[in-house]
Length: 197
Image (tube, rainbow, N blue to C red; front, side, top):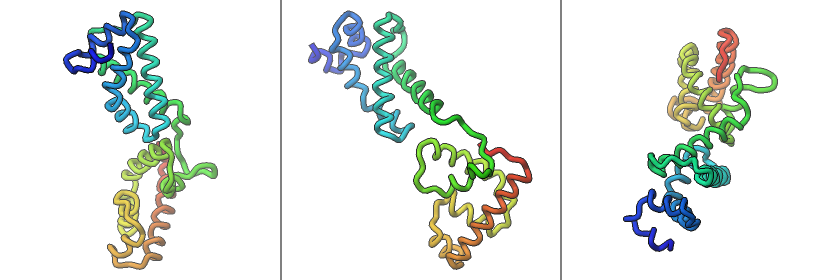
C-alpha cells in the first residue's frame, strides 16, 4: 500500500485522505516525505538534536490528534500546516525556558559574565545577542581606543592576539583596554539606569 504513495504523482492531499480513511501507514509516508525539511527547520532554531527530535515528535502527535478529532482543515497545504504547528512548538519551547530577565549588573548576575562566557546554552546565546545589540547603542560613549577593542573582541570575534597585532599593541595593553571598556560600560549602564534585555 505504501508503494503507491512513493510516486511523487500522489500528492500530500491524497495521502492524507487515505490516512483519514483509515490507512495508518499513509502517515508514515507523509512523515518520511517531509522529515528533512521540518527537522532542518527545527534544528536551525533550537541548535540541539535532542530538543529538535522532541519537537518533531510533538508536532506529529499534534497532527495525529487534530486529524483524529476531525479538526483538520484541508484547504491549506499539509506541509504549511505542519510547519505552522512546528513553529508554534518552537516558540513554546523558548517560552518555557527561564523567563526573559531584565539584566542589570548585580551581585547575582552580570552582563559581562555572559559576554565573556565561551560555552553558552541556547538561552544564554539569545541573551548575549540581545546584550550586544543594546551595547551597540552605548559603546559610542567609550573612549575611542576602548571602543575599538570592544568592537574587535565582541563584534568581529577577534582573539586578543589578533587585536594586539591589528592595533600594534601588546596583548596586555589590549586586555587592559578591554577591562577599562567593561568598567566604563558598567558605569554608563548604571548612570543611565539602562535595562539590557
